[in-house]
Image (cartoon, rainbow, N blue to C red; front, side, top):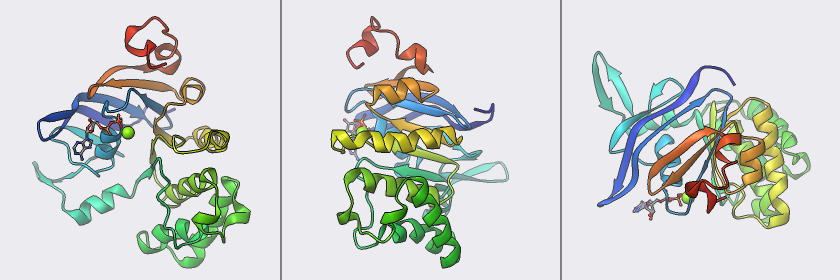
Length: 251
Ligand code: ADP
Ligand code: MG
């Protein structure tokens, strides 16, 4: 982990109607860090990831990712909200892996991975294909490149989804409960890939209920409840407090 801060959220709030889904959330994530976010259902974890990834606009506060203010551009000393095209460009550097894989069903594993690099990044089909095959091999799916999502297990689909995120050459990947939709026996094959990714130095923010992953792989853990980020610090400390009333129930 370097000293460089890759993601910084300052006093981030987000309401839906009069419901406060995020309430003055502050968080810093360094380059190469794995940061887990834990907390009960409805505590704002997904909303927070969606705000970092610009799938939601925040009401107040600010988020920086990759050195850029998320959702705003600067002209002179004025800030303007980005338009959709500018947002799309900014989002490219931030990978996202969802609970339910969200692969294109009518594209093969290989095509799922090459789609973005060819059509969004402008890579040549040949270069994108070579990179995609290497990525599929790195997630243990070299032999499945020609298969469609419906022919793959949930664990395999999620590994394709990780390869697809990597195909966009992100500097940061957000994971929203990446193993929660999987049959229990398939969880470890996805966690193993995430382990490798962490070891390779990828910066990762991971919403998860997998306490083993949080404890053993992540550097820091944040605990959210009621839209607030209540505790944040080294995972070993945050996750070794069995008598802490805030986290005890959850752990
Ligand atoms: P978590 O991921 O921690 O389970 P979420 O971030 O999904 O929690 O949701 C936090 C709260 O915000 C929930 O009460 C949820 O119902 C509400 N919420 C999330 N997205 C929306 C939305 N688009 N419209 C209205 N309410 C929402
Ligand atoms: Mg969620």
